[in-house]
Length: 170
Image (tube, rainbow, N blue to C red; front, side):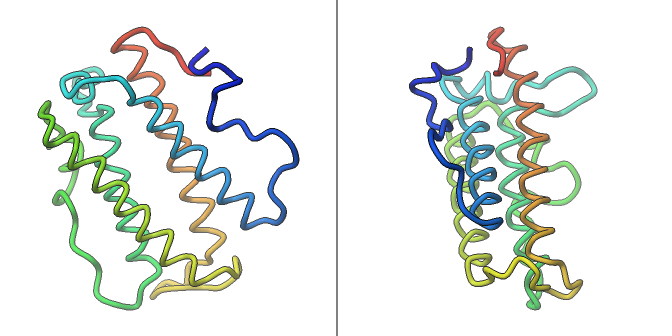
C-alpha cells in the first residue's frame, strides 16, 4: 500500500462533509494531497524524469502544469484581463521541467500560491449555481472540472512513480 491506512492523511473517518460545496472541496483537497504524496521522497532528477518518448510528462511537469491550470481557472471566473502564463505557451510547463532543485522548489511554491489564490477567488462565490466570468461558467462546473483535472493527473502520477521506483498507488 502507498500509505498505511492508519497514517493516511486522506482518510476521513466518520461522517462525510455536509453539503455539496463541502463535499466537492473535500474531494479536491484529497486529490491535491494525493498528488503531493506521489512526489514525496524523490529528488530533482526523479521528479523531472520523463515517462516514455515522445512524451514530455514528468511529475515535476505535472506540478508546473497544475499551477498553470489553477491560474487559468482564475482567468475563467474573472472579468479582468487574463493573468499571464507562468511558463509560456504550449507545453512549456512540461518542457521546462528540468532536474534542478531550484526548479522543484519553484514549482511547489507556484502550485501552492496558485491553489491558494484560486481557492480565495472561489470562496467569494459559495453559490455553486452562480455564473462567473466572460463565459458565464458555473462555480459547480469549475469545481467539478478542478476535481477531474487533479484525479486524471493523479493517475498519471501513479504510472510515473511506478516507473521511477516501482511504488504503486492504492
